[in-house]
Length: 73
Image 1 (spheres, rainbow, N blue to C red):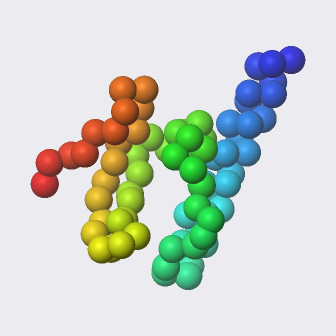
Image 2: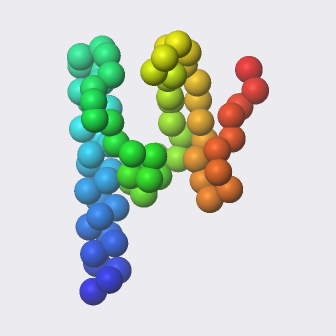
Image 3: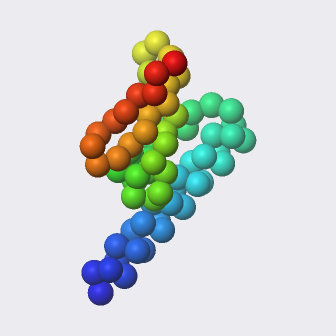
């Protein structure tokens, strides 16, 4: 029963991220609220594009159990 519930939550998180990504592409700007990092990871999105809300600097972040890794540029 627990495994089925976890699978449903994972699917819901994946669909939330896919929906949010589609709206981002169609509108061309950020949409609030965005999925949480936990929802993105649980939904199968280990690579995130992020942008500082203050200075608007874009960056990439690889998520995982060891925390965040920022690729060198």
